[in-house]
Length: 331
Image (cartoon, rainbow, N blue to C red):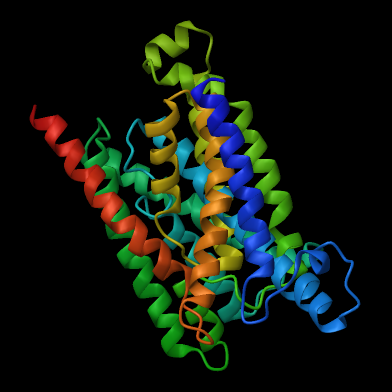
């Protein structure tokens, strides 16, 4: 069995194990029989089906969305430091989500999908702003320029969110929850809210894996191989922003998942995007389920925001990748 096949099998088994742990472990221990519906304990059954399962499935969707968006951004920009958080896309999505809550926006016809839709619009708009400003500063679009522009944009959007918090009333707690990042107190309605967007945008990116591989060879070479470079770039950026916006709409800003997971997948299994993107989805789901499990059990009964857990993991990895890239540049 090849290394990649082992990686696929191990990733799927880890995801299944994390789902089981996420459902069974907590303040109330749930036996396996209850998870499969064989228990007559009504309380345990309620905990499983109405509290833990939607939380675990939502964490899986959010983790998969952020990880595959990060993998796509990294492949497109040819830099392992690119992810929705460092590019400022998560901040733009947060502004869209917080504004929806602050102004009480509910668009006719689409109803509950208003929140993820406006969050996605915020994410896409932010990415366009970041890329446009970065191109004005540096036409070669070096990664350092893009990240600096992303930081500046994030700071501006952070000020907008702070303003809305200062002016808000009873929505304050909900908005702060968005900023910290969490999947606590989420229901099947939240899963239903983002699942279509995650599945459609995720599939959209997976269809483009061969084109992303071609772009790794350079835009001119990809064009000669029959790739419509401009179209593929736009599609990847829009799909990645959609995934980020959908995730942020229900979980708030959770950083570094899109940076850590794709980087580790590439280190272990190579740079072929036919494997990197789907494996990033699987392992991103696993990572966020486990981070949520640790966040809600490490200091019971108090729950930590997932964003805190991912930052503890992601910030050192970001620093390591950054200095590694700088050393390569010096050489």
